[in-house]
View 1 (spheres, protein in one colour):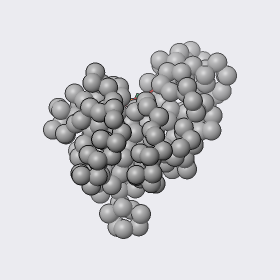
View 2: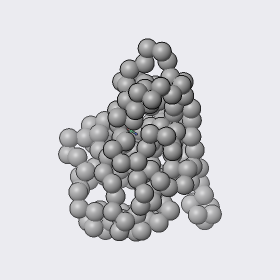
View 3: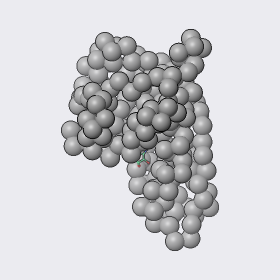
Length: 186
Ligand code: GRF
């Protein structure tokens, strides 16, 4: 599920092409934003996509396609508890900080890195976690640290956290969980 540029989706597509992701397949890209460049990335890679804001409809589409794992890759809407319950323990999210720092309501995109720089932390990073009713509150799956540099701006920091942490963590987590599902361990 995407909302914006889709660089995390691109990391997943590249990981599927390289064979890093091999226990599952990206079968659908769902966006709540018609303008999301992530939709173009899906199209360029022959992946079916839908643009939907009605979560009831989305649940039906996902169930029709027998979706086994929902990956929030730069998805900026808070999901309803109805949606979360429909895919219990099968939704993961990538957040651009080391949770529990700089997360929760209003902490998304560039704001996360602005807060980290304002606070003056020396280390930040990214977190992959399960999604529950609390924004960024689900069980942590993996984290990766990224050093903050003296001259960092929110933009340079966001880029480095994406490159060094998000785009590494998310494909690994997707493969790890897909393998558990394929083996019936989850
Ligand atoms: C970025 O802020 C990223 O840190 C977070 O979602 C936003 C967009 O990601 N995960 P993407 O390029 O759409 O994957």
